[in-house]
Length: 471
Image 1 (spheres, one colour):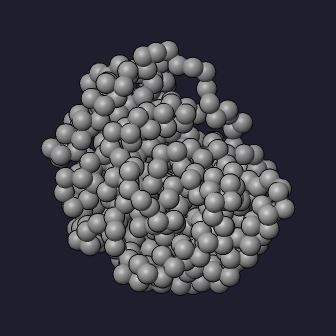
Image 2 (cartoon, helix red, strand yellow; image 1 turned 30 degrees about the vertical axis):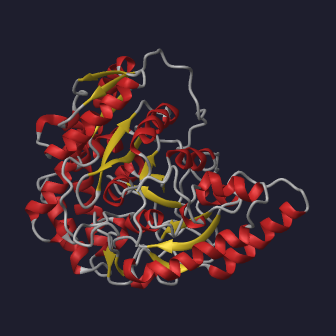
């Protein structure tokens, strides 16, 4: 549904517009939070996106903001914006369960770095969102919280592992959803649910999980990114601006500016319809071509050309993650994870069954060479436009149906996973509804040039409109 000229309810409003209306006293913060809590009550029962609501805390925070505004004192840029937080991110006052029954009482004493920052900017967490066990499946389901349903089509997965946030945002239960992305866990759910998402650059968002028994493995340190889901690209920008500050708990954080130097114009865009030549669904390719035309007509220099080493980047991700899952993750979770999650992880590791220390070290070394090739390529073509997933017909629990289905999904995610391998910023956003769910495209930019990626995404959104399912 295109909302540009339609009268909207509060739950349909963009996060930017909510914050502005609250600051200008057009609407009270309590009214915003109350309406979103009512929306959750009305629709979450059939979707199971939000696992717990934080009614009391949220309304207290809303009243505090209303009081500050009434006194004429300034408030933060996110003041009054209702947000949801995935259950593998620390948020004080609620458990960081990772979707595991045994962690139902794992209550953090501090917020995750970026959650502390958005709360300081005035955002109000109103609920926790569902995920797969330990956030490791591409479908959102676990024995503790149950299964999340795609609001567009119950016969299609909502994606994972940030499927709870994607569904919550798509249906107006939340204005912003804070999740994370190891190999598409933000961007795949965004595609399946008709919303937009950003996976920032490596080092952009400070990260720390206080309840982890040890430091994360190397691939998690390199490939796992905290990010956000929204209905509008401008809301991605607003969230990014308020979650990117320094935090002493993350030594990987980089003090990079949010905007870089003005790029040479016209900005060149490399378009890849079928990354690596492994196959692409006709409708996915058609959506990319349509989007390329929009950018071209808006002054971008668009050329159909393949980025370098796409398959190498994807295989590096598969190789490193498979070795770590097999040797580090599976032994640690066998006693507490569900049979479904273990089944998927076994399928995953079988994609690279013979990984050893030498191949692990070689893959880490190879990552540097691939990143260099992309740096050279992006000197000429700073933006890459291509698919999020090259296929979209994935049913609920597809990932535990067969090794073939798991392999098909991971191959379909090759451009998504390549962006994780290289630490590059990327945005996924919906562009057209031709089937039961909206089609989507992905834009990848140079490291720390989220501004360029978001700029192109805003142009695309002007043509595509905003998609919100009514349930």
